[in-house]
Image (cartoon, rainbow, N blue to C red; front, top):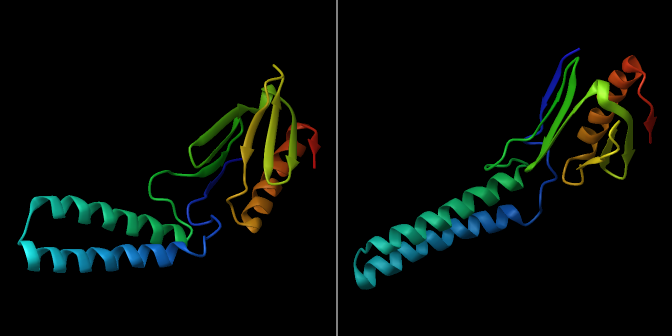
Length: 149
């Protein structure tokens, strides 16, 4: 069984991010206009404006549920389970997993060496968390791994 889910675009969308993104673009336009009118063009303006435009793009992408910097995914194959949410990446081999716990938007994997691995799903949309738990549950039934929910 192979399953891959790209999680970008499925994050909870912050309500104010679109406002902050548009505001950053507006400030950039006003800043360029006023600064060049009164002082003429300077290269420092280009640095400030680039930073503001990047901030605006990041916030607008966030408001749509995307992440610009990192890639998030869920990958399940016959040998391993690999999850990356934000910068938190966890990989576990099915043969090493003793139990899996799903509690309060967290996935907790307990391998046979007793070192727990946690992945927080608090920033993902609820239907994606349900889809992830269903896919993992299907595989754990096939592999006879107990699940605690």
